[in-house]
Length: 281
Length: 249
Image (cartoon, rainbow over all chains, first blue to last red; front, side, top):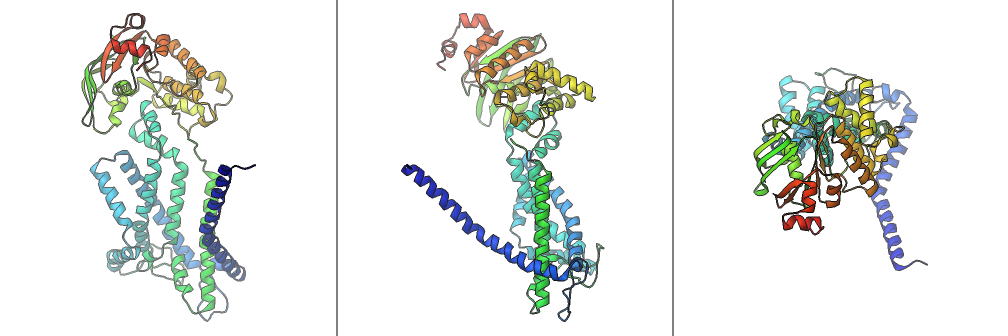
């Protein structure tokens, strides 16, 4: 026999599950659509999808997205270490020295940057880098990506560092650790998994960013460029351009590129879960 | 000569006057217990002695604080803490380190042991002194979340001892653990006093009676009475001490 309390409990649990399903349905739908369309493109294009140039509207085959992959990888490799290093140091500064003027300044600047539209960042970098160098470039794209991603990475790292109970900080100081030792030997290792997740989120943000690259990277799809000074393409830019195209082959390439982007996130995410141990408090 | 000597120490945190003209003398190689109700300033005294009070925003300390011959308020705080171990009210072993590394890190940082074999020796010695060795000797590479609360607290004691401190501060170390583990910790503490001076904070008069050589009673930031433990238990001279001993405060 169930009493009324058990019935209520079951009802609420059922309601929570149902609402969660409703909330998750669009995500599953999105993933499913990308999966179905993306896999069909990849099956038709084969390995060439990763090595060939993009098709023209009149091409017979689907070609590939090699310039976009190279451009995205290049800018991610350049921007990610810079963003992670600056954001992590800034987060350490503001959590360990919250009352210093520099910390207050860093915090205000980071929070203000969050509200700047990414397309505005793209325009500013266009003025600061593209105009003086007279060329779109991976450097300009990287610069824009760093500015756009920094405030989010900083906010994330700050929140995980602030989540560490004060008792571990005190314990570390009590065994004569210096402030730097407390940060490097205790605080950061305790949230190591969180830091890695932060790196991943930042990477996802950098790889998925489109607007910041519109006036900076150059959408160069005629060849592979790995130089800092020449124009490059990026996967999101290709998706943005091709999905709006009236030509079926270009739209199919856009779906394939979206699938590649999604797959790369998932691979890195699961690899991280396997490799980095969670610290149990 | 005293391990700790406080003269007219005042502590302010913002506009709050926490400690009021506190004076104390802790003889070397004794167990000195500070007893008082919650919020009376017991923990603040310990944190002034090892300068953890510096972590508190707006804290200001006035007076003379001599610790192991150092002028504690003027000595480099990191240097001072090399000689002072501390066990906190809530067990706080480092969660990302194994049992072995939790103890070894304190020895390594303070130059007590450098080679692997020296470290092994210090870790074993500290765990034995904390009466934990027999329980963990076959699981030194487990993480502390697998230990019970009492075992974790004894691990923290071992970590503090691995520094080879000359002064050990214990901040109500048995409050959050079961009576059996509390008794083991007390036994460990009393067995240590030939090697290290112990300054312990508690609000439990029974515990104070079991471990203390000297007792100071603190109430509302003031030391109301202090002296040899037996004398203070048998002849309390203030009403506050009497009420504290009866468990009414």
